[in-house]
Length: 323
Image (cartoon, rainbow, N blue to C red; front, side, top):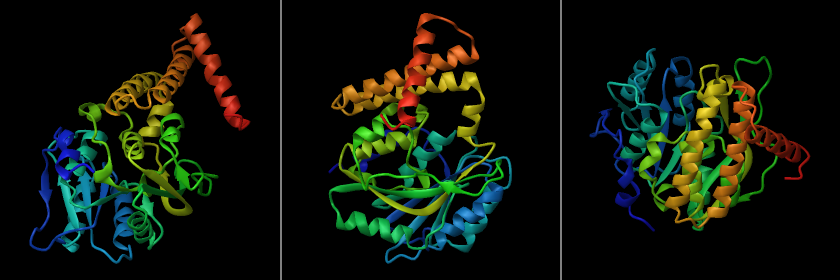
């Protein structure tokens, strides 16, 4: 097992931030650190924080809120809750916006728990026993490094009731599935044994999907357990990062480039042990990128045509459950 110091060696980038907390009243040794990243979440944040504070646990936990220089009243909400719950809440904020990845890295670097859980400022938990159940499982199953569960997806810009994030999923997940499959883990469902994770590479601050990197680096060191119960809500907003990527063609192309660089960095970090799997995912991402080039930039070349056909064929296979 790697040490706490080793696991945070590469988290020094953008860790400079002001911490608002009361050391004289904070819980001394929290078993769990809950990381809540927030930016312009003023109208959602109260629900997110309350869903953490309602947790019924037999252990102590801290809520570490990473506030990324919001332009609305988000910081005021954070500070108000910190004053009301000084034994639990710590607030980190800087004098400039650093982006989701660096905001997450500096929060991870400051967290004190053995286990880490996540709940972004526009999501929320719905089950009072969620944290207790997941941590208890990890404590009882030493071969397991990560627990996650199903969630409800709520798109606030679409008049429809919430729907399950996942339809079906085996109870044990391998690293192969994290590398090859599209995103299938609601971030607010993650509880992990952070100190058993392979440390982030130095490029982590530029990763387009830090949560996927976290999952892969965890799964390389143990088993992953899935709970089919819905215990959180994943809120999709018009201002959300995923929604913005989907709306803009050039952003999708740039995202593919960054995603490929992330996969290459993770492959190297894991000593090329899963090189074949990473190459498959990189190739699929290249096909997607060529499809977007054809669709948005009208680059009609043999490469973009081949990539587009490959991407469409891959989606047809998935739809028919062949792949």
